[in-house]
Image (cartoon, rainbow, N blue to C red; front, side, top):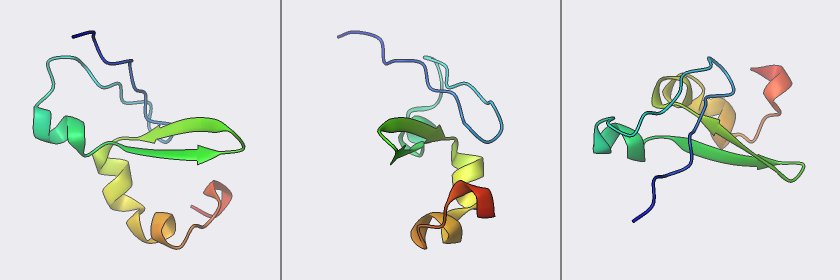
Length: 61
């Protein structure tokens, strides 16, 4: 099985590592805006869950 692509949080810059806890690795959130895939780490996703669910543009966060 190949290594997963590196993920970097677009809000805080945290990078997901290969040896990260599997539960934490599953908590990363991906969004697609204007054709680009963006990632949020679990901390930022938890902090902005209402904004994500309300589909607010990133500028409002």
